[in-house]
Length: 295
Image 1 (cartoon, rainbow, N blue to C red):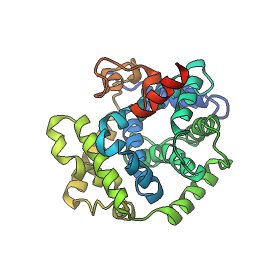
Image 2: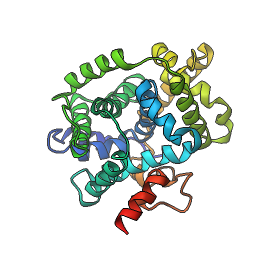
Image 3: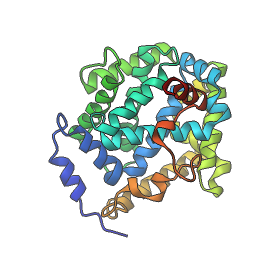
Image 4: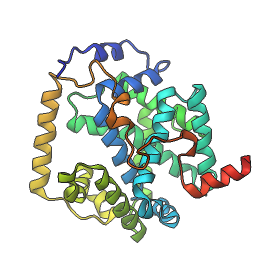
């Protein structure tokens, strides 16, 4: 196992968050915190289900309840395609356009888009404060904010808060106003949890629901999702394991010499065992509609 040489940490320290935000995000996701960023992204999706207006739409589409693995894979794959190239890159900008076409088939409020965007910023930040081998620096947090702000602008979102602190205040106010239990919250969350379970190693699959509750950990959020409180014993065990992992990662880095985004774990999608075509990612019904429009 390669020792951590801190060369990626040093490279990150030399980057300007206002100009180099795409490089900052790539370094974080490919070398510095790959699995942390991956887990935080999945938790970010789950947190959107605690908003009844969003879960009601997702419940009507049936994507998480009927095709949960594909829905989770599509979201991760689309974001990877965009962020690997950058929203301003030739492929990244085309993928943003593809994402906009998909979203254009649904009536989604601008503030719901903003809340979802905010989760992909703050979930990694908060996860790493709890379980990372180190916290993000201020510059890295600013770079993460700038990268997703650029994505939001490319998606034509309106009224994106101007800085990272203002966005967090906006996010908390939105959550206080909009979060609460609804049957659709629980239905969509349970569907997504089943999908996540299919992605885990066999020994962990029976524990998927219990692990999700531990990792979400927020009592108000869990109540809004209808999931109930986590097991205290399991929470203590998971915390010990993750803190032990953090200590180990301070000395060793599996991604010191190679990039996570080229690893089997990153490129394997259960829904696409032979690989995927980027512009066919998304709900099959909508992809077929787009095909007919361009035929």
